[in-house]
Length: 285
Image (cartoon, rainbow, N blue to C red; front, side):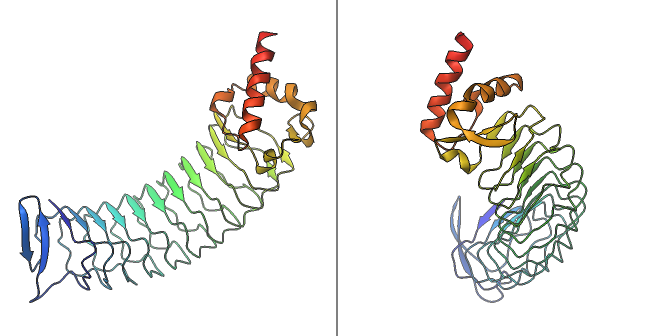
């Protein structure tokens, strides 16, 4: 059973003597208590300050865009929780069986209290300075726009990471099984010793000075320096040179590493078309 209580100016889920008009598939109905068989509850965009009154069998809860300062009262069987856009400063009170957590746009300064079985975490737009406290089974982490200066604490089994818009100066601490990395808009100057399983890298808007793309990346988003049509990066000499001087070298290197221009995401459209033309001519010759 799914119930939508979004945008009704509700201040509590324990309605008491009051009632709330709810739109069911069979029509509108006044309710004074949440039904015990409820599995999915959408109560976003209200004025909730507490989660008391939730049924024990609830599996999915969206309580974003409220005024919550605590997560106490969550049922133990909850699997998916979206508590974004609240006033949370702590994650204490999360059920042990939780698998997916969206807690972005809060006031979090630490990740303590995360359950060990968590697999997906989106905690962007907070005040985090460390990633300590991440569970070992985490597969997906979105921690963009925080105050991170290091990636220490990442679990070894992590597959996808978005750590863009932070204060990182290096990528030390990346797990070996990482497949997709988004690290744009940081202060990273060197890209080297990347995980061997990495097949997607988005690193634009960094002050890159040295690049060593040893894995055969399938997707590589060029740095913002490539927006300038007159300069390009020489992968052999590890420095920026005139675009015309490095066309062929770069294309040969990309081809050897199994990267097709069709899969590349290049910021400058004029440059994209120019490189594709050169690539086609090079293959014909």
